[in-house]
Length: 321
Image (cartoon, rainbow, N blue to C red; front, side, top):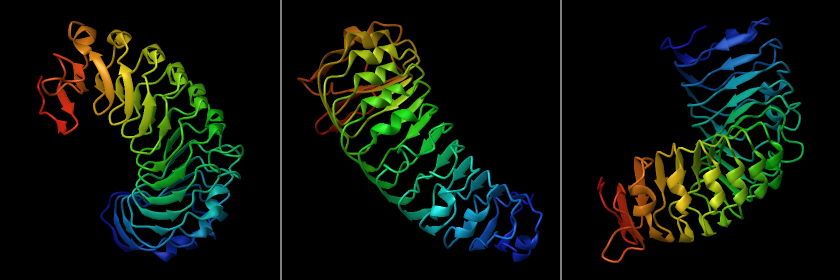
């Protein structure tokens, strides 16, 4: 391994001539230039090139490595599209390529034999919809971690997402997703992190989200969600962070929210909610450490004596608790 040795220059082409090479670990260096072809190394199953200064595109030759299990090229300066051949790698388990400048559509990974377990392509410039990836032929069997945040994906969240029942982390934040949150998302019983903030999602919050009994972090902030907050959310007994801020939610905050035992952060500001949070939270032993609501001004929509920040249409106050 040559990990974290401050090596610089281009990746030596001599490495690509090692026919029996199985592991290539060059992460945490200062390598620049393009990624060479590894087509002549059929035994290569582990490629880690993260935290370098690599440029150019992901070579399509990576798709010829039938035994490749692990591919990590995050934190580089890669451009261009993700080769479709990578989506057809039959053994790929982990694919990390976040924090690059990749563009184009997301491969379907339909040729992966259902072995893919973790994928992080966040902080790129990927676009298109998610229908192929989360489709009927997507990697449904073992995939537990998906982070596609901070890209340019559009369209609806496919209803077929309910078939990805091994998911524990689903992060789709800061895209341009539209439509409603599918009720099928309530079948993802093992999800502990669900982040859909900063999209253009509309409709109501599905009651089925309350069935996600393992959920600890739920962020639906900065969308266009309407309607009332479903009472079923109180069924998520392990919930620690709930962000519903900057939507168009109305009605009263459920009184049952005062029963959350582990809730550490609750963001309700910039909505059309009303009611008295003082009675719900301020006399409770379960008052969140961060509690933000529309309680600012002489005639606020929400009364709250224990909120850490109060907001109105013009902004939020400094911390008050």
